[in-house]
Amino acid sequence: MSPHGFQQRDEQRGLIDRFLRWRERRISDKAFIFILATVVGILGGVGAFVLKRLVATVSRFLTGHFHADSANWALLLIPLAGIVLTGIFCRYILKARLAHGVAQLMKSLSNKIYALKAYIMYSPIIASTITLGFGGSAGSEGPIAYAGAAIGSRMAQIFRLSPRMMMIMVGCGAGAGIAGIFKSPLGGVLFTLEVLRVPMTTFSVLVLLVTAITAAMTAYFLSGCTLDIPFDQSVGFDVGLLPYVVALGVFCGVYSLYYSFIMKKVSQFLNCLRNPWVKNIVGGTILSVLVFCFPILYGEGYGTVGKVINGDFSTLFSDSIFAGHVAGSWGLVAVVGGALLAKCFATSATNSGGGVSGDFAPTLFAGCMVGFVFASVLNGLFGLNLPVSHFAYYAMAGVMAGAIRAPMMAIFLTCEMGAAYAYFLPLTLSAAISFGVVRLFTADSFFTWRSDRRNGLLARLRKKL
Image 1: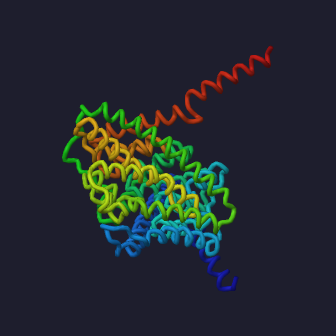
Image 2: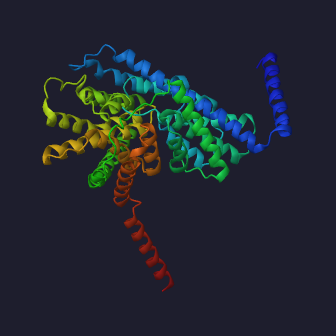
Image 3: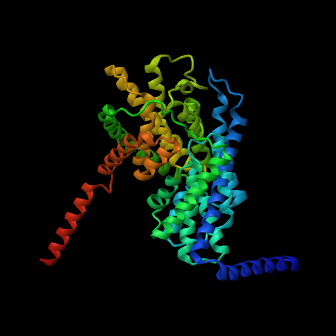
């Protein structure tokens, strides 16, 4: 480093030292943490807004010339190119691994590694823009949560907070990313508590709440005070539909089991490919073929979700090979059902094939399609008049709760995304029942716990005898 560089670094350290001494005299530690949390929330909200805008811009540039009434053969190349370019960026430019950001963050927290690298504050945003803008069938919440956690960590390092407070700031930054990307303050809080499982006191939860609210409001104002999936609430919830909502919750749970199983198997298959180039090409090819067959799988899918939950089903055939060849309500149900079965393959190929993206948005999209298929089939078979768009909205919480296994986050996040607080009851029922179904049939279910407990008691009894 040059003498000028050393001098500049010493000046920066001197400014920080003077600020810390001033803080000790003027501001209490708790007040300063709230100020720092607000700054982290603002930065997290700005990062979420920038990521969404970048993804939308790239996607619009690549697909703006597509014809909605016919197949678009470019979809066989664009998603594949996105996965390969993301792999090149991570391996040769950044020289770091960014895939599965939430899993990496959880591993760092479990190992008490709170000092995250500075490049994580921006690199997941760039990599996720390439992946999702080129058609990766996943979400942007994983990268922004990772970037937000790095922002919180960096702020804590700059101001020399204790390891305990550094952990809290990492959790606050991750929650800010989720709150900003979904515009859901409680969703961000519950992500930190329910998914990351960061141990927090009453004070630290209040700090987290301030961060999440700041991030969500920042992203909301920057986007022109608009919601990503506004939900038409002109018709209230009919209590007479409760039995069908219960059945929907069971259906969501069954689909969540299928979704998780396929995600795991595709991930295991791609992880067996040691050569990163082969992994990128195989994963990108799987993704491209599925997106070509079902173009609604392109990107996060919020545009499609927003239209379906408001009763507009016209885009479900757009850009598809089925456009003009499949007609009628049953044809539409068949195509959406095919996309529903393919979604988990496309998402796992994106995340495990070398893309940098998240797992939450795909469950919201899949839930929307589950609700559409469920209500449409019942209406067609039994002559019912179930509100298809509303059931699509309720199922979003159901599939997210079952697939992510975070029911509280799924309920509040879905409710806040559509600002549909009047529908809290059906959202809660769908999420709770779906989560219960998944818990009954997974390795950590109640029945397995009873069996393990009985085996443990028998082992202790034999030891005593």
